[in-house]
Image 1 (cartoon, rainbow, N blue to C red):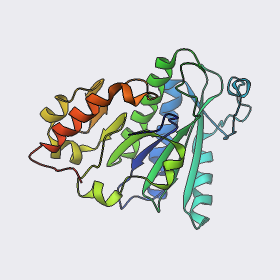
Image 2: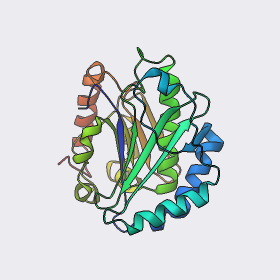
Image 3: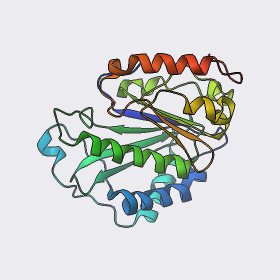
Length: 243
């Protein structure tokens, strides 16, 4: 289902969307992250120890718009057309969330430390869950992906869900957190989605649905029965079959 070391979350982007098209959305999203979730854009710095995690960033980005515009310009000059941005929680000092947009995969990857949700490593894991989901909801709101899912191990970046299957409104499984865009949500039906035995099912402003199977994405075996029941309900939907 997922790794015991959750560290990344994927959004599958519309096939016609490129990095340049997302410039204004990324600027607005980055400003909203600071305003709503007390997050600050910073230069990415790899952190390996608890001391490094709790050390405030010294590379805060003051002019978000100019920074993103310059990053997009460099990304367009790159053969990979890849854009990477990073944020940290001001209230929790240097707890990082970063993301990379890779247009050849049509995917946006959000990544954190493997210990970001670990109850043994940091206290108040539920607070971090709320902040991370809030960050994902902002990504969804401003970037309008077709589907979002995670949290998976970082090595799964080489194997994102098939964008072609998502285009055909087909899913292969469920993850701890799932964002179904309007087309996917409509294909299954809101009544079906609300009947899923999930920790949280929320209808989003654009007609999409956030489906959170469990709160802490570290021990999926605890909710295995709920996953199985949810997949059975979706398979029985009259509109879409699982791949």
